[in-house]
Length: 323
Ligand code: SF4
Image (tube, rainbow, N blue to C red):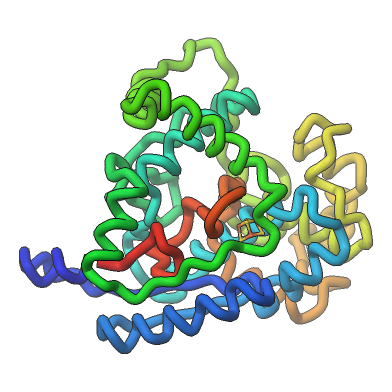
């Protein structure tokens, strides 16, 4: 982006945004690379941590919930953290490092999960919803191997450690399957993206209606956004709230089952307005002003490093060189 910006005189003000999930042996190391990149490229860097935003690190979440499903927390929190960071920076566009491999994996994952809503939008080169900062994927048609080769031959300073929690991630299975398919049919990745682009959803399929989270005010199709439900579960000692299959992933059912809605109602004052401060402490008060939307976790990986698609040209990963 920096090279293109200078070469073509785009006039863009670029920022680097990194999220520190609090994963010892992974993100702590990678942030050192990002800090070097800040100096090398002369682009200001902002780092936001899960600890500061949510009061939890991924190490602590994994210690609480175990090594299955932890990527759900990480992906949801990171997506929202990126939105918050982008809002803090005052940018009008988020540019992520999704490459063709990432997008094809996401198409497969959404098919396997039967997630029609995400399937419909996951191949869009720019996604935007009302009130959210648009996200672009300039590497949509660029293979991961091409990016890695570019970074290697250009001698870019990048980070290549695998996340210590990635071996159990769902995306890893989609990735392995994709690589097997690619051996049989080399054009598989682009073919799958083309399929995703061409898919049409029948008119009578019910799609989620977008609203805002009643707690943090961010975009959500449910009463509470997924990040708030997951966080509430963690803080209540019920970490499986929001990831269990018992409720079929229906957030409204989860909210009802665990009394989260009732809690919200109790927070209404005598004047009928909602008051968020009670019982949530300073952290929630602080978060209210910063949060910028609830997304969905699409970040998992089995091999290499975390491959979260919602990362802003994260130069900490080998497939995310900044150029
Ligand atoms: Fe988070 Fe990615 Fe590691 Fe999963 S693999 S814990 S989503 S950094």
